[in-house]
Amino acid sequence: MNHPEMAERLEQAMALSGITGVSKLARRTKIDRGYLYKLANGEIGNPHKYLERLAEAMGVSPQWLGYGRGGPYDHERKSLRQGSFRTTVTVVPSEGGDYDIDISVPDIFNSQRHVPRDPELYRFIYLPEMNDYFPGNTLLTVEKTPRPGPGIYLAWYIINGKKKLGCYQAFYDQCELKNTQQITANNRTTNEREEAQLIGRVRNMDYWKVDETTDL
View 1 (cartoon, rainbow, N blue to C red):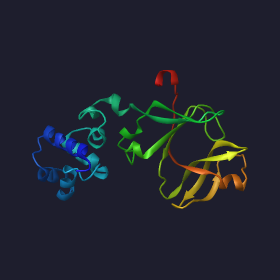
View 2: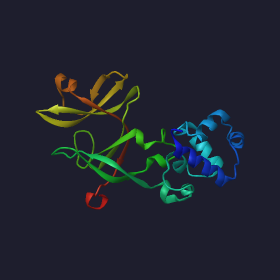
View 3: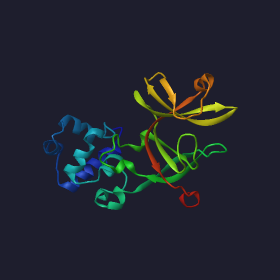
View 4: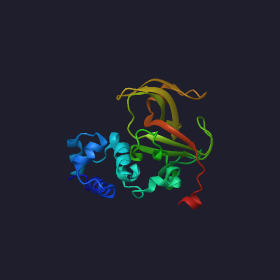
C-alpha cells in the first residue's frame, strides 16, 4: 500500500455515504471496478480524472477526497470554494535578489473548471513592483514541469552579472524552447538568451496584494 491516506479517505467517504462495497461504488459511478479496487488498496495516489465523479457520488468535497484538504463536507462552504491556501511563494523585487516566503494565495484549484487540480504541480512567483513584463502586485502560477506546446514562459537570465526574470512567448518541445520571442521592447543579445534557465510556463495570473507583515 503506497498511498494509505487516499485509501483511508475513500473508505471514510464510502462509510459516510452508506456505500458498503467497491462493487456498489463502481455501479453508482460507472468507473471500472478493478480501478476502484486499486484505489481502495492504496495502489493509486489520486483519482485525478475520476475525482469529481467520485466526490459527487459520495457527497464529499473533492479537495478533501483527493488531497486531504479541509473536511469531507467543506465543499458546502462558500468561503472555501472562493478561498485561499498557504504555500511557498518566490518574491522577485525590482531590486535585490529573489527570496521565498510562506503566504496565502488564491485557491484557484477549488474551481471545478481548473485542470489539472493539484497545486503541487505548480510554483508561485510574486512580483511586488512593475517590471518589463507585468504590473505590480502580480502573482503568477507557473508549471513546475512544462508540457509540450506554445505558451508564455518565465526564465532566469544573466544581465551584467545579475540574475533577472525573463518572459518569453515560445513553443516547448521537451528538449528546448523554440521560436522564442521576448514579450518586451527590450532587446536581449543571443548570448543572453542562450544563458536563460527555464522556470516554466505561466498558467494563471492574479493581482494579489501581499503584506508580508501579516501573511508571515
